[in-house]
Length: 121
Image 1 (tube, rainbow, N blue to C red):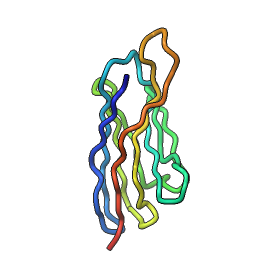
Image 2: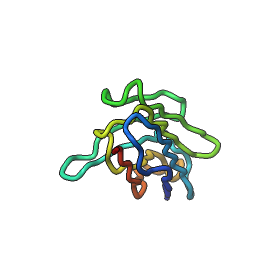
Image 3: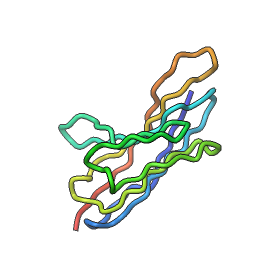
Image 4: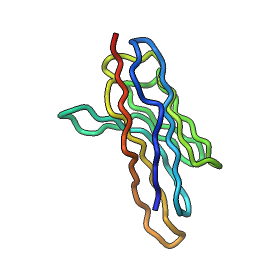
């Protein structure tokens, strides 16, 4: 089982920056993909960025050039550096991990509890 603990959310002014962190813990064989999703009231959860264990990244068009995802594999931690924040980035941000509990297990998705990011003057 994988537990994900997020940190780093908060209130920031437009144009400012925040860095989110998410650490994975528990018993697992591997975590192949880690990423960030976000959700606002009344809308579906949407992908922000993902990164594979090999370092391949994927971004939503709305954050390309502003957000940077990175990963520390030995620490099983993923980061999201958010720059040039806009009010439209306001949302609850969820950490996600896709991994395997054991070498024999099927892959599963795991989610953090979410952290609020508010961009407002």
